[in-house]
Image 1 (cartoon, one colour):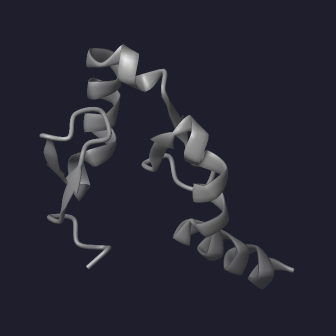
Image 2 (cartoon, rainbow, N blue to C red; image 1 turned 90 degrees about the vertical axis):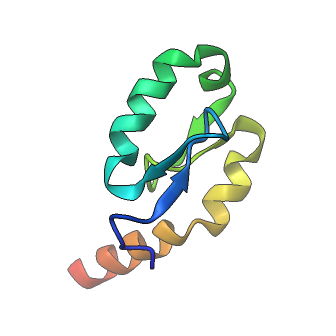
Length: 79
């Protein structure tokens, strides 16, 4: 379940880190400082700051990001 706060997520900075979804944003900040060489190679999705992808793959990710659809639906409801 994507909304389960106890769901385990893989850290983009260290593949051995498995973090609960509820703690993931805090972990990203900590790991970004611990792995600056990896951080330089990753780009942040404009639709969800928890999506960190290799810079070369950002445009592909943006085109298929599930959160993009949620944002577009929200904007559509406001107009």
